[in-house]
Length: 367
Image (tube, rainbow, N blue to C red):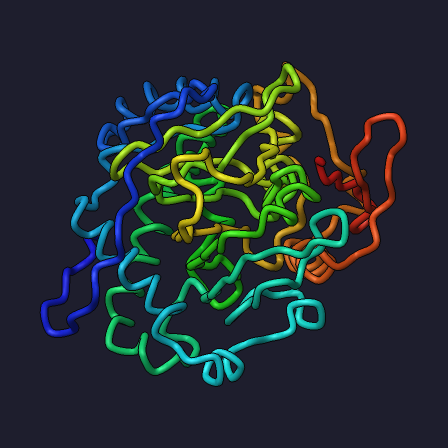
């Protein structure tokens, strides 16, 4: 389901920043060729690599995902419209209170989340329902809604559903559609597309936060899709306790599992800990634009493991909570969203990390 490149709606090209030349310690992520997922035999082979990635590193790249570099660039151009071409007055109209609704829709202004040392974030977001046409959007974005909608559907059906089939095969579930079936593109699902921009901070803010722009965390949903962009800032926490950088690959996707996948897989696929930090010296001073798709399970799904998995029966199930009190997707996303960045966290003196309890589950924020 390729994204059409519109010719009628012209748009300024978002400037591309050269990749860093600094000698960074990068995480060695596997590269998955999604074109192999077109056949069952190809999926079985890919599932081996994806399973290894999701049970160890927790991140992997995807290439040959069905969109060209030009289509990728076009979506970043459109994403920038949400920030640079919408007035502050119109942004206010489309700004919602996620603390009250438990749902990211519309704008999240800068300086809503506390980072450290009295410093708040410099992150602006524009969040959209996976069904782009469901809600109204700012006027400057309206000429591009058909492209945005096609992009969102491509992410959900072609990218995420393909990954979910590979993960189901990795669990040896009898039906490779088992995970797909609980992640539908429907009104009962709150998967979301997101445009996001990080703005540069002052030297004083960088000092007070140790250069951390977004604290180490796990994602709320099942599968997160990040469209790789050249400004280095994303880091993942390795099993050895070291933070490593994610390298940019042109027209690649960066994939990771979130909390919901850990619930559903009985701990087999781990929610991956990642953070965003100040870019290396040769990329500082630039705004960092991001394009994302966050897939969640259907709202009515109770977040309990697929206990029938032969793999889980062999290795054992590591539950985040007892099945009897496990939250639904709706309960989990509302509680996690409402409290993120605004809840008073408790410092664990032993680990040095901050913690909160959400729906009976301990959630850690990694400093």
